[in-house]
Length: 77
Image (tube, rainbow, N blue to C red; front, side, top):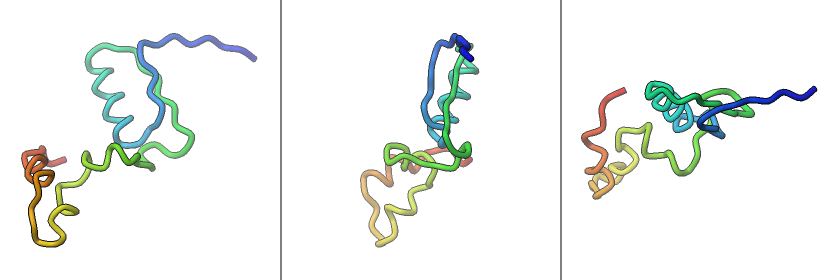
């Protein structure tokens, strides 16, 4: 059984970064195809760690770093 698919963008991984990218591209009018082997939103790659937390991991020792200050203005979601 063979089927052909056409898309503008192929996204591999349905973690928080993949889901965010998929939503953003679709709002801009792109046709997207997202591939995920597990549950959607169930995983997180090392590269996306700064996207979903509010900086608490940088302030655990009571010291603010440049990284914690850089994400301080992130919108609450």
